[in-house]
Length: 427
Image (cartoon, rainbow, N blue to C red):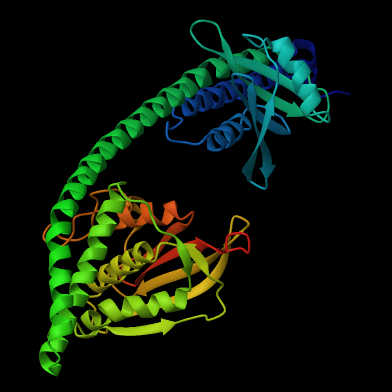
């Protein structure tokens, strides 16, 4: 026999109604949680930073969308003329990784969603794609968001509608990134034009000064040579020799000024780097040692020769050494290392000259600007900000590179890379 309460529950259906009520309540709560999660994702997608790279944007989109939609891979496609850029994001543990695939297609003025689906099948044959287009205010499509799955997936209508809304919000963020990159590029070009104008003015001034000094210096050198032939006493002869050597050095500086102003061609010759180091230390070594700086040489005699202008490379090395001298002024045990070596960069072999000091060092922001004209880390009374920019121009005119590595309060190292002289380049 059934109990009295059980019999009443069966006749009235109260217990079954209670179960139905809780089931509906749970379903409603889950739906609200899902909607809240979707709103949270939309809010996050409106906060994409304009300075992010496209790879970072693709990873960010994938990580946010994976919270509310199920897919195996994510694809951000951007269209630039006939070039298609596929930013493919794959799950990597709890994170995502992205790789770029660039393709060239003969496309029309616009790309339709149907055309894109055909292209997608050619590029990613082992996945099925669900795409929404990105189009600007004029209706032109400039990209796509694609959810990639290994098996064919049909998303429920409410999820697909949410995906379309995502496309609208992402479109605004991507257009903001495009606008930021366009403005940044124009600002950069404007800054380059300003610097070019400054360098042109300096070049013109340098040429004028060099020509003005060249004539009296020629007379000084000529007269000193005549005196050296006539005066044979040891002490006067030594003084005249010093005057003559200083005059020659001044003449080299004038030649460098003329070369810098592009009014005189570089004279290239075969150079042995070890000999070049000795010559430069002969010019400025005493100036460094009397300042209490220890100089160490790390010469690799097996480094092949290079082809370049001796005076120009000497100028670069002297500038690097004098910069190192200034950098170690506040160091208790100042030290400069100058040396030679051989290295490979981007598949090309280079002979290397390097200058390293244990001075104040530089942070990343300073290293990013150190070769810009008029930028200097020194006080206004010590630096003009031209030395390294001129040095970089000299090195690049030789087909070489000037690299910097530094750490605050530890060291700075400048590496001058020059292409190794081949048999064909030997005179």
